[in-house]
Image 1 (cartoon, rainbow, N blue to C red):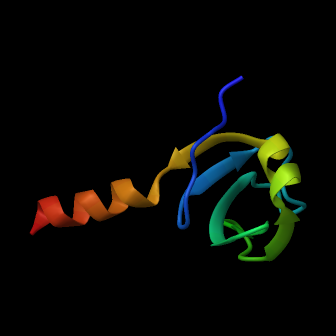
Image 2: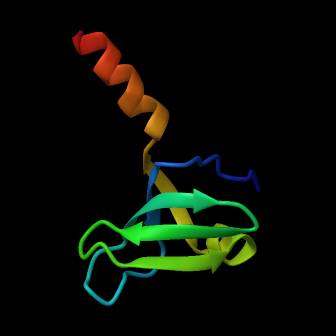
Length: 74
């Protein structure tokens, strides 16, 4: 199985929803642990990288895509 590519600022879809009901999270810190912020209620959670990778379903929006879109508008 291929590892999913993700980076700081990406919006990711997790397998299980946050208690507020949404399963979209934004990556706000990366290292041995990954801090993700709920898109719905803005609560942040620190998750070990191995656990994050197993709970990650897919990357919805990449941070690099956001930057390219802003450049095209100018």
